[in-house]
Amino acid sequence: MSASEMNASEMNSVAVVNQARAMVYRLLSSLFAKEVDHQLLHELTGEQAQAFLAQLASEPAFKQDIDTLISVLNTLKTDKALLELAADYCGLFLVGTKHSASPYASLYLNEAGSETPLFGEQHQQMVQFLKQSQLQVQTSFPEPADHIAVILAYAEHICLNSGDAEQLKFIESYLNTWLGNFAAKVTQCDTGTFYSALARLTQSWVTSDLEGLTQTTH
Image (cartoon, rainbow, N blue to C red):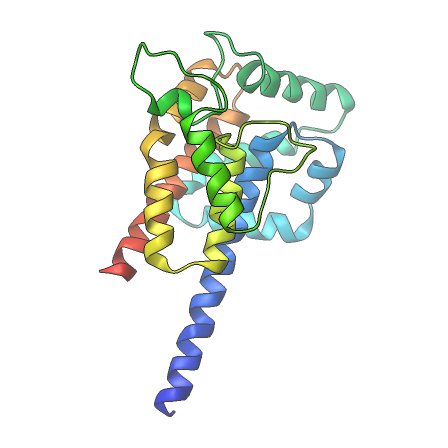
């Protein structure tokens, strides 16, 4: 095999890996963006999604939380079950009480005791990232741009469109710096098991992804 053929093969392999990484970020973003409805449930329990989740679960660090997600998804056979999970989502991410887990980066990155306005610094920084990439938050998603679903969706975008060093810098600065506290808060407040497993899986995934990016950039 010639050097040019080897380079082409390596580039193709990297592209495949980055597509898989982007799919993980897209999956996580979709689950934080809104309640699980009939359409999302259909997608998540489909053959392709189940195969993808099974492949992810082959990694020991992810297995327990993915098993929990799959187990809960498999119980959503009725409208009542979907409504109960939607109530968990609302109680955790929409009501904004001391018994909820805010999905906004600003509330975890600002100094303790300081007042944190919505649409603050982290929101403005994310808006700039989105503008630079000619992206924007969908009008159907009326949330500040530092919502975890938006940040994860942007991570999906840069997996496919940016170099490893830029990805490493963004994921470290805009996800890893606060995910631990967020996951702990979700686990503390979740009355069920689905969203605490999702938050822990997100933290585990980001930790693993950063390790891989660090290896490729050094």
